[in-house]
Length: 289
Image (cartoon, rainbow, N blue to C red; front, top):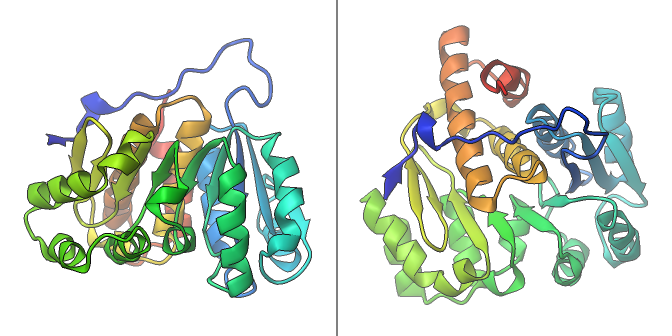
């Protein structure tokens, strides 16, 4: 296990003669009648990471609300309050125009949404970031070329979906030693990791697990429990991935900078009054190419 430090951070390089889109086109699939802010936070974080273009595909009322929140995000407005199989072909068309897909933020757990995700995931060849409710719906067998970004309870559900035996799940969830926990996760997800997948387990101590490496991030503050901070982290991951960083490097970069930003805000706000949107606004303070 390695502990993440500044020497592990490698930011994507931009070409001087580049054109719009060369530094990543990100498609964010998420949002529902109940949750509007999650996809907006994720999309803005992806843009702030340095990505050139972010499109948010969301139910129409969610998408209109996002347009009011930011003129920088492109939206694709889908009929209805939730994702369903009716949106399958529209999303397939959008996939052709984007490099990376981030899915799950605020998408909800409706039956029709689960059906949509289980079907569309088989068609997505792009690199993927799987977050929030998508983690609760999908399994290890559904994914390749992906980064999943669960907190511990989402990981528990993902393991259940992946048919890991209950005693093993309980052992992993209850393990207090970080190195032992990481080793247990790696051992039980070896086939998943071999298909070019990475796990970024969020928490006070973040764990990043790939086929060949385990990283641990000890920095950060309890303010990362605030609603929306996970969406910001997922957006950062997708943004770095869209700019050409590897799956593992994208996860390492996002975890490192996300926790550095939380430390800055803790001092700046003199307590835990800061919001996830404050994190987005402060990305520019720590990312210097």
